[in-house]
Length: 345
Ligand code: CP3
Image (tube, rainbow, N blue to C red; front, side, top):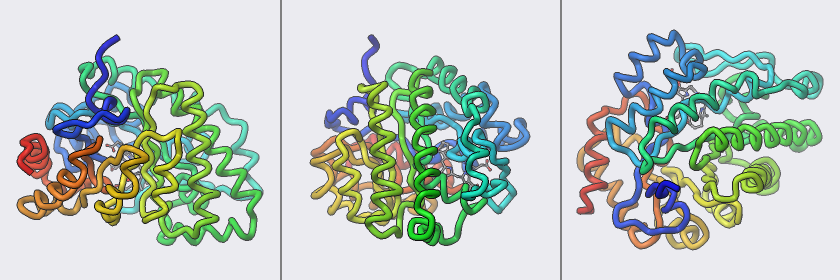
């Protein structure tokens, strides 16, 4: 068997002198080579469902920056689309899903074979794994049920996603049915990504912030634990990373889930608190404010140095505290990688 990559070894608890590096939204509009292929593909979704092109876009940032991991190029909203909601991305508006899901129409979404629609994604994983050197990992991913549900329930990005918790009080059976359905699909989806060649998987709970504890536990912590258990049952050796954004100190609930190997911290989390309270339970990933990479220079380096120093004596994965935005100068990303790899923090 090929030797495991540095990224996978780190998630299994091995400390590194220089941490492995990858970035959320490392493939995307900030890269000219991405914009070129996206234009050729026609649209973002055409790109997602074209395995040869999606695989190429997945590889672009790894090639440009020699990163330790590639992340599958796809989107968390492909599952709702595969379930039968139409999905489009309006320029400057973000995603639009139609019709919104309700207690009245949920049964219509139940019986679909999502894997028919999602087959090209598994093909992208296969092509990408075959093209990557052994020392680079391939990360598969999915959205967490709560985050995906906010889009399904609202039809677009919600300005106040936490307001959807009203359903928890007013129609809990419907909310639970939706979250459970998403959790079951997500288990299958991630297991198929791993079967196709993904070396690790990450679950994005972008809209977990702002929920009171019993609601957060019901819609985020427990569903993520269920998904992790379902993935581990089929693939006990594949690391699972959670990224519950904006949850503050309740991050310790996620860190203590035994099925999870890594925890992404967001830019608002105090890294010293995370080092003291979370590192003993899980491998911490990320934290750096992506906006500091737009600024570049001293501010970016000072930010990176904080994380590198705090986490130098534990296994740690270098990353951001959320994804890059399109205005990130590619050369700042290059300078950041060089700084981390230089080791003079
Ligand atoms: O490089 C990577 O990180 C891999 C690919 C990836 C994308 N989306 C590609 C993408 C991943 C892991 C995601 C996850 C995702 N998608 C999340 C969770 C992480 C996060 O960012 O909080 C969410 C909430 C989505 C939903 C989504 N997709 C929105 C709200 C948008 C529109 C906003 C925007 O930036 O335009 C997308 C579109 C999207 N997903 C783009 C990319 C590269 C931009 C598409 C384009 O116009 O080319």
